[in-house]
Amino acid sequence: MTPVPSGFMISEEEIRAKVRELAARINADYKGRSPLLVGILKGAFVFLADLIREMDLPVEVDFIATSSYGHSTESTGIVKIIKDLNQNITDRDVLLVEDIVDTGLTLRYLYNLLLSRNPRSLEICVLLDKKERRKVEVPVKYVGFEVPDLFLVGYGLDYAEKFRGLKYIRALSPEEVKGG
Ligand code: 5GP
Image 1 (tube, rainbow, N blue to C red):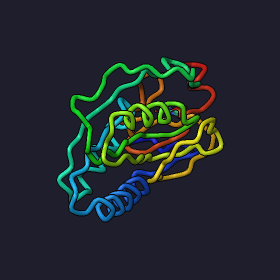
Image 2 (cartoon, rainbow, N blue to C red):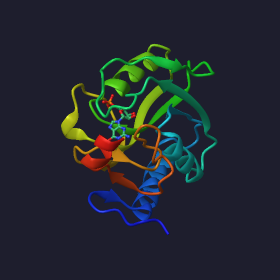
Image 3 (cartoon, rainbow, N blue to C red):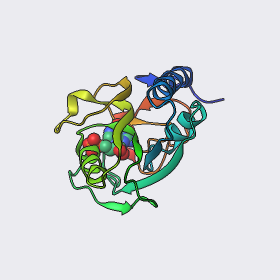
Image 4 (cartoon, protein in one colour):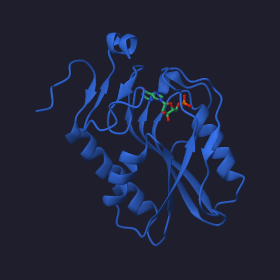
């Protein structure tokens, strides 16, 4: 049995319903097209895997990886590409898929980078949005949940590489951050 966490959480059922809702919107918006979904590693891989299974379009998938926070919970503002896309995105309908947008620095950087490669269209889909933390504007078209300023783990989101396999999302307690 999975222990029931206390404090802020988004349940497995809530996530499933939201992923279905987002997929339905994307299906409608991209009808007749074959979008390339670009997952931002590592955090987005669980969300992306669920999202494409709720979609009924001939999607393609690629991944891009940026440097992470390491073992800290704060963004450094420096974005480094660790793994680039495997394909050319010129004239493609590209949908960037991210687990969470916080300051916006990562997505802003990746959005500009991909835009410079002349895709036919470029949109952003995030599961979680920590709106109050935003430092730079990012044109996010699809948002799952607006979340409070807490450090969240689960459903792909980690803390020091742990917790990615949780089926729900929850806040990390201050004790866990100190002890991590
Ligand atoms: P940003 O560049 O918008 O500040 O941060 C985006 C990245 O920071 C996300 O891809 C994610 O890896 C990480 N991040 C931001 N907030 C959280 C959080 O609450 N939990 C976890 N695990 N990662 C976060």
